[in-house]
Image 1 (tube, helix red, strand yellow):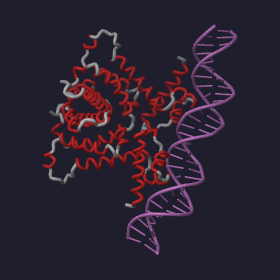
Image 2 (cartoon, helix red, strand yellow):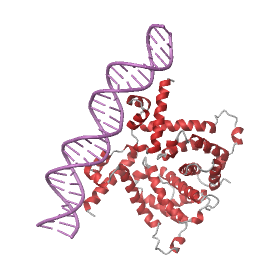
Image 3 (spheres, rainbow over the protein chains, first blue to last red):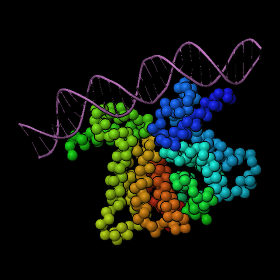
Image 4 (cartoon, protein in one colour):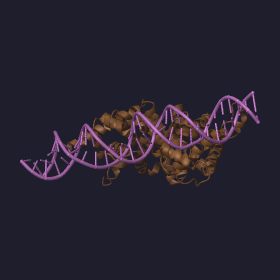
Length: 182
Length: 182
DNA sequence: CTAACTCCGAACAAAATGTTTGTTAAAATA
DNA sequence: TATTTTAACAAACATTTTGTTCGGAGTTAG
């Protein structure tokens, strides 16, 4: 890919991220992003059709990076997955989030956590679906999945809200306790 | 209060609600609301400073109505509360939501559920805090509260998403099962 | 009845949106 | 190296949205 494209794209992402630290997504204008990123108006629209698409692409970028470790390709020998329990997976995931905090401070700790978490849940479902054993069977399956994903996302939000003070191990432990996994 | 004010306010709420059924909050303009409500531009801004405040006032209006039954004043004799368990409270709450569906279809089933749920959770916390017994003690108290509120909100979202097919009793039962209450 | 209040439409400036145009510089290709 | 493609850019543009101001007309309440 053209080096210039990367540079522009990067500049826009960074500017957007900086703005997200200070303002809510809704109240950020394309004009502000352009000014902050110091790119031409035309350039922005050449890269991103709308502000929403910018957000979406930013999120998928993060998640594809984070979840690439968590979701090994289908071709991988299956027992390698079985080796890692759900608790290890979740802990590992939280470590990735904590590490990425610096890069994605705007999305994580800004006024737009909810948007971030909406995309987060999509990827989270993939993980939980790989652990059918931890799913309760006395309620409908999709209800159970939604409950696990939703409550974990809420847990992460709680964690982020307070500045990620606790270790990932502690959070996973608390979560799995309340989820009735232990 | 002036009857004209009520009429205008009502017209704006209804128009906003109709628009929320079709479009996401972000993509609704004040102009559209004005046109749909058939009120003057000046009138809108006389009532609501911004679009966000309009949403907030609409939500608080709903919740104050719904939760007025659920949160009796402090002066009420306490044992009347103790009579009703958490399960009955939640079921009762879900019935209110289901009844109000017609009026608040836009908020409930539109593209802006997340916004609705954010305000919802604030009121929900009030309820759960009245039932400290159902809160786990092997994790921090605020973690437990956040977990209960968050997972219930996610449950409600799931329920709404699918058109509220199940009865409130069923939903409460499923939820309390997974919350480890039974 | 009167005084205060509310609505309305029109007009307004300021800001944001999304597109077009021609030019310049960088990258890919041959 | 020379050529061609590609991207960035500033400037200008029409359009839409925002939020405010004005005077006039109708409604409400004391």
